[in-house]
Length: 292
Image (cartoon, rainbow, N blue to C red; front, side, top):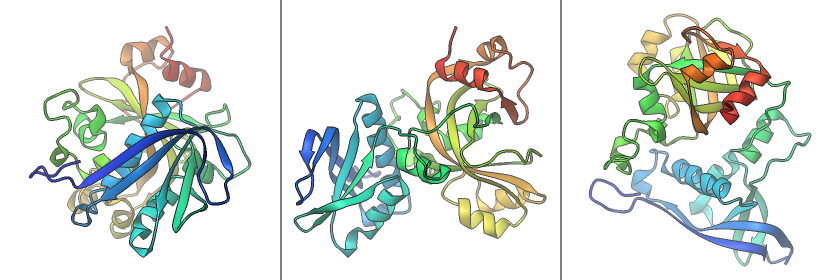
């Protein structure tokens, strides 16, 4: 990634491996492996969530190329920020390679006994979606959709698609936030939410897995929690939170196929989507697969 002066401010260099010994102990990690050989963000560019953006790109590469594991090396106090980022997205300490710490993350989902949030962290962008998990559709206005989900913005495919100056902090994040005045109290950690872009496209292109959902009217507490996650600035947040507000923290995932309002009607989701709507598991599966 480059700044306005074409100076590189963030870089990830990767290499594919297979059935490799990653630590001094010599244990072989079986499967296809992606090594993030170099993973750096310029100190002057920190705070823009470029590291999170690089992680997002690396995870997508793993999914598209059927990679089993992703790992990297860290060393010394200067890389505490990188270690923290790794731990936020499911990497764990595997062992030592010479003087480096080796952090590794599985890139295949496994149903296990860990908590919902721990599972989401460990296996992202994979997640549990069994019939016991609630699913919802949430409407979002185009201007907020553009900023929160720049991969799906009107700039996609244009000459300026890779111009990072057009991306906000929240546009670079995997961990995002959505606020509204819906009355629903049923949304909880692990639930699945689809975002329906209203007015212009009238379609679903992305989704999220809920990390937390709660009601609040405390602007300061909420702003501290979501400042890098959402499209709202402090003044806008004050206007929104003049009454109890539903705050949804989630991890962002792009859908493989865009699902139109016409298709939603065909699977039984009728009428204008103007508020949060729960859907059943069959409808969820049809949206995910965009079945005909």
